[in-house]
Image (tube, rainbow, N blue to C red):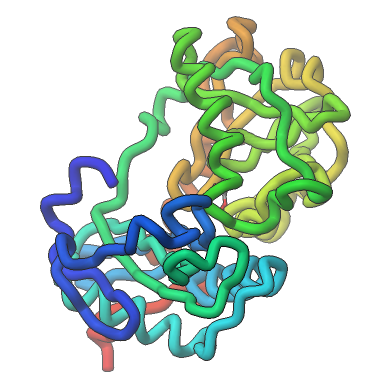
Length: 312
Ligand code: PMP
């Protein structure tokens, strides 16, 4: 959970707010043994002027959680509104007045029930938003030698813990080779995504991103940027297959996600992207994104949920 862990006081688990050290799962559950879970990672941004914390597109995250649950044949007796109220309760209980990351996990809680799932548990944890990378400088990536999991084996559109082993292999390989992060290709050799973020390139002036059938998680940030590009910058986003070598000759490449936010990629496999500096289009969309999530840009209010309801 990173350095902010000391600020995490209470975790919501199965209807109760419990101290962090009491929020536990039995070692004999499929949750622990097989990583049998699905989850969401959400972000909320503190707006000092409004003295409000804005949850960003929470309902869309909850909808995606329901998709993950459905595909994994897991059913919970909650609604998206329930999820929203549990999330608010968790954040408020910890009194966060800073940018945060929220983890919502549904896990299989049957002791010894290795391949069955009668009992599901759920927990929600709020923690200070981790800084993955310096988004002003950009990062150096390699193309991973690991290929992306696919819909026929471990569907990437399900946000399940076990899917992250694929991204871990790529991240650990990148780290061992001295890179910040990795770009993962599909087994057909097309660009998929980074271990925890989707990818965009600007090539010949066109903003382009791999389609949702390219082994990606259906990222909420990706969809946000597609909207912002077209509505605010007048730039339609093209969704099509991307070759690895297109990234070498692109003007700009950047990654996006609730955790990665908008992270420029300035080189791939030690080949500079463009002039090796953060590009203009990336800077523009990054600024816009931060303004929208924090509520400095007053539009798109339907995307922001006030957590403390200071104006009520
Ligand atoms: N791909 C993967 C594998 C991820 O883990 C994430 C982060 N959740 C993303 C993409 C970006 O998704 P989102 O914008 O919804 O956070």
